[in-house]
Image (cartoon, rainbow, N blue to C red; front, side):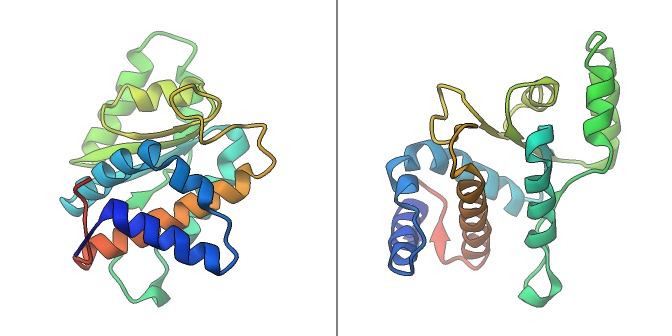
Length: 183
């Protein structure tokens, strides 16, 4: 069984041979691996992952949901969801105090026993809401702690899709005990 770091490096290098330009991930693996490993561990223990995005990346949230759980893949579905209208609920309650956010959190607590947020986008009310819930996965654009993703990068959409595909493959490899999630 490989550890996730070795698996990632080998996977990236194999993809490079197939023409998938992902060497930039190897350079930034230290930004990706700790959170990816933690999120996968959490999911394997029964946790759900709720996808939130900013408006500009709403297409990517839809892409994740459309591609993560397809019946033809022949594997169990992963607990990754995007809740219709959650974005609007957060935006509508962002103007007031934290009471609105607390009501949304209470609703989610009733729906899911254990969940984390996967936020993709720029810093805004949605990212603030997601970060209020510890332990999520935050792909914040233009943030100093995550210089891997920049909103002005002409290859940003491509990079997001490549990162998602790696994540999807890592979940399956972990589920099948092909990789260890210890870094």
